[in-house]
Amino acid sequence: MVEEREIEQEAVDKAEEIKEEPAPETLTEKLERENVELRDKWLRIAAEFENFRRRTTAEKSDWIRNANQRLVLELCDVTDNFERALHNAEAAQEMASFRKGIELIYKQIENILKREGVEKIKTEGASFDPAFHDALAHIPSELAENTVAAVIQNGYTMNGKVIRAARVAVANGENPQTAESNDKKKKNKKK
Picture 1: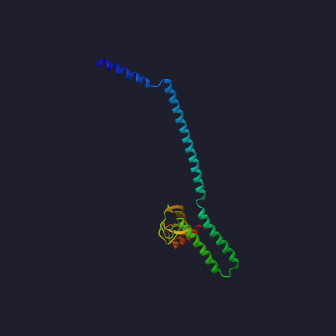
Picture 2: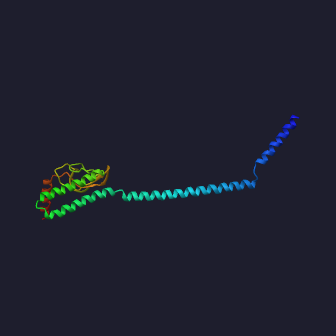
Picture 3: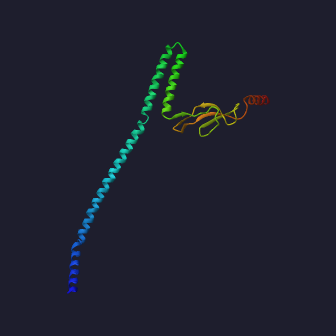
């Protein structure tokens, strides 16, 4: 009797399992619906991401275009001061007052550049360094060889990065007087 009950119970359990499993057509339809829903979600997320990317790119472009706005406004003030100085130069009787006005404007520009992290590269008497200097000439000088003897154009760094190298003339190790006498000897030999 126990065995019959166990067999009956097994048959009932199998019948319930068969009832719980959906028909193959129903399962396929369910999977197709899920597939459509997931595809729809994926397309929406992809569209949202593309819109986000476009907005971010547009914002970055605007930021780059307007990043120097404050600096430009400060330089406009400097330009106004130059215009005033030039206008008053015609009426200025004293050259000293005109010079003082120009010096004040120069200081104003210098202060703006310092606030922006711009510094002039120190060159006078410095050893030649190709990372900071462009050598345009080797000239006779009383200074040691490979020392900056003259500055042709100032160089600048911005926040520690070279934005314009200083253009310099570098001492070649010859004394200027010795170089002059050698040049005269060469000219006399050619005659």
